[in-house]
Each structure stands twice: as C-alpha cells, then as structure tokens.
Length: 280
Image 1 (cartoon, rainbow, N blue to C red):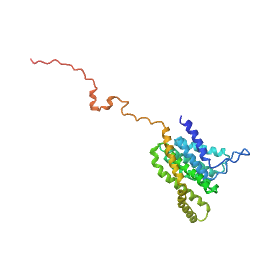
Image 2: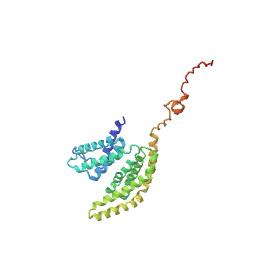
Image 3: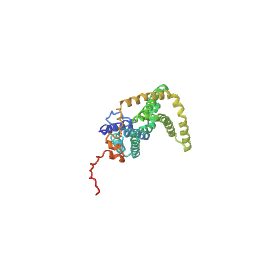
Image 4: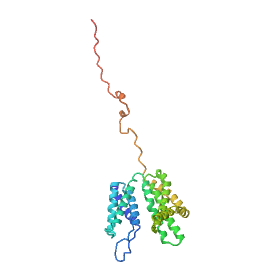
C-alpha cells in the first residue's frame, strides 16, 4: 500500500526538481517544448530529482528504474530530440545515481542530505546573475541560501529524527564548500591554458568563503533556528514507536528452566511396593 502514494510522489518530485531549471517556452503557439536544456542544469536537476525520488520510494530496485523511465519519458514529452544522445545519457545517468543515493537513505536520510548539498548550492545563487541592485541580491539570494540549508537539515533528520542531528555541523560545512565548488566551476568558462584555468578555479574556490559568510551569515543562522522547530514538528507528527517486546512473552515457563531442572514438571511415576522376602 505504501507504493500507492510513494511512487506517484516520487514521479512528481523528480519532475519538479529535475526540470525546475528549465521553463516552458511561452506557449503562444501551443508548443509544449522546454527551453533549450544545458548540460549543467540537466545533470544537477536529474541528480537532485533522483535523490528525492529514491528517498520517497526507499527501494533501490524500484527507485532506479522508476527515475530512468520518468526521465526518458519527460525528455520525450518535452519535445527534445533523442538525437541529442549526450544530454539524454547525462540525464539518465544523473537520475539513476541520484536515485541510488536517495534509496541508500532508507534508515538514515543523512546520505541524501549530503548528496543534495551541491545541487541546492548551485541553484541558490543563480538569481544573482539577473539582478543589478545589491540590496535585492542580498535579500533574494540570502532567502534561497537560508531555505536551502534549512531544507538540508530537515532532510537529514527526516528518517531518524534528533539522532541524526549530529550530522548538522558537517552538513553545513559541506553546504558552504559546495558554494566554493560552484564558484570554481563558473570560473572555468573563461578558457585559456590548463594552468590558467586551474589557477582561476583555485582562486575562486578559496575566495568564495569570505564573501559568503560575510554577506549571508544572518540567513544561515536563521536557517538553523528554523530547522529546529521543523524537525520537532516532524517528530511530533510521527506515531509513537511500538514498545519493545518482552522476552519470553510467547513461551511457557518451561522455557526459563534449564535442561537439568526439567524433572520438576514431570509427573512422578507411581511406585509399586514389593513384598518383603522373608528368609526361611
């Protein structure tokens, strides 16, 4: 019965997260084709959608084929051509790997939260490229950065509750490192020799931490404070765990007796008295 809701929810989660970076093209002429996809958006979107789908389905043998079929079907329904095999293969592989990481979080969703850190960091700072006013950039990007961290902390405690809170500190550090990785990847677009590209990527990686912490530390603090009641409400909504079974509930009293004490419960045989022999 669980698959009656988890499978449709996983399909919707993959569709929303996997194709959220691309938008429907106008639709004035009735076209349903998506905007021209890019490799980075296709890979990260498929990966993030696969993680959420695997987290919902919880079964590896079902999650991976499911996200692959949904990815291929969405690619076809969106009007993209199957001749673009490179992008299609990237989408399918990223979705399958994401489903693998999500399904690995059956008992503990910490692995899924770590896997989602890089895609969330990649999406969080994208509106900065479209805005010129620093004030709006700080508000919008700060809101996305804080919401992303709060969501990751919530996902980490989704399965086990507060016992998974030990991962909040390394998860927040991974989230910040993901922003530096994104900055390093964006600096590669300039071209040049291998040494120039490596130097630019390294400088961008190490220079990304200071402005991020300086500009968005209030949003990061609010995200942690927001994640605490979110997890508390999630745990409160869960049914109480069943009491642990008492040992020997279904076994009789004989089970608590050792083998050398079994004679206590045995019926004593009736004794026969023999006539005493008298000597002549």
